[in-house]
Image (cartoon, rainbow, N blue to C red; front, side, top):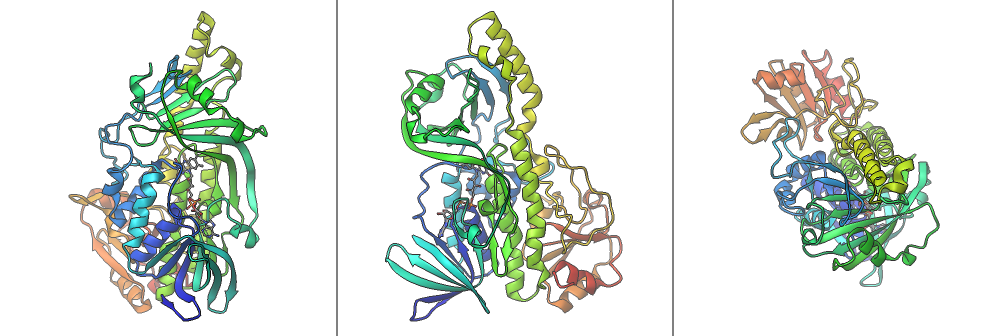
Length: 539
Ligand SMILES: Cc1cc2nc3c(=O)[nH]c(=O)nc-3n(C[C@H](O)[C@H](O)[C@H](O)COP(=O)(O)OP(=O)(O)OC[C@H]3O[C@@H](n4cnc5c(N)ncnc54)[C@H](O)[C@@H]3O)c2cc1C
């Protein structure tokens, strides 16, 4: 990056927005030695808690970045009960109780080296910010707003306002990635159209401080309380720090209710308890959408995160999907800028990520469906035998239908890039799609399976900077030579463990820097150069 006297900054990648997706992209580019400037109109303060769930896949990214331990030690303590209660109120009746192990108590998973965590964005975003800033090539500028941009022969030129100095600035970049969230005008400026439902429901979230809540309520300590009421509004109370921070979620339904007119005090008294002391830290009205952008790239400009997909927070996918976008795009930008990619590599970004986003938006929308028989709602709060019977029926329904909603391994670890132009299919059958169940597979287009290859070392730890050729007794020489001839970084690792070999099902597997299998086979292909061209987008 360099500055000229006319306040023109030059960089490789201009990132718009320092939400979690922009910060993750900056950090990953920084880790790959790519210079980038991040402009964020805000000052970096996070006034309201949004995403809580850091899923296993995001934790795998954090593992690569060396911050997994920090995430584990931030947010919800490992011994905090992650149980889910469906109740009529915290002074009322329990309708259903879904017990879940604490993160500290849960056994290691066979499918990933990194268990998901509860670490709200109020804690997680600063970890990403510090990580991004730790790389010399990352120039993170708060209070800087992107005003407009034009395409140039060399990439893009952006007009930016330095809000603190009140001065205009120009930034020239080879690529612009807008991680500008769901409220920005950048997607519209690119002519993006949205598929799906722009407004599913309206909500008001209230960020509360309640000291030692569990000493003032009849229900056991838990991470999630879902309230069942006569009106079917079903608010929720969700823990943020495992101590005194909570988020009350109120459903405004589709009515044109002014969020400012909501009586928050009445809601707290009704659902939490009339005598429980609380303090409102902030509140956030938001609209639940179910949308995916039709276009994720226009020339040198890319979109990622909430700028291209928004859906119900149910399932906790939103931020995690955005980080998946960043992780997919980052190595492709790096490879292109470093000169070892063909033009098709950046084309693969939309081809790979859009179908994943569509699948996730569908799953999140389906999982927010009504969860109690509407006919019984009117009785749920009643202290009568009929009320008791209604609660029993509802509890059985919840136990039957809702437990799976909190399990999404098939979405988290099973995202596949089947239609990608830079994946070489091997003709093996397409695995069944499941939201809840992840079945490890090394079929090209899948996340390469995890297995321990040494104490504390996962197969996933082999992936990162270049391509990785996993060799389970095959001949990797021709592939290594072909990669070298094309200038593609590739490291071969021989693995003797038959259990790991069985998981990959072939003697050779080629994994990309993002840990996705690009090709596998028992023999190297006849033309290894053609295969390398395919996976680097130069076919
Ligand atoms: C109530 C709620 C609960 C949620 N729970 C979860 C959950 O449990 N799990 C999960 O994964 N997700 C969850 N989400 C979704 C998650 O918060 C978002 O998906 C995530 O924050 C999106 O990150 P982003 O970086 O794409 O966008 P944002 O976080 O919105 O960041 C975009 C940034 O771009 C900046 N910006 C915009 N335009 C400009 C401009 N012109 N110039 C400079 N800067 C600009 C904005 O100021 C903003 O800081 C939840 C969301 C809500 C509303």
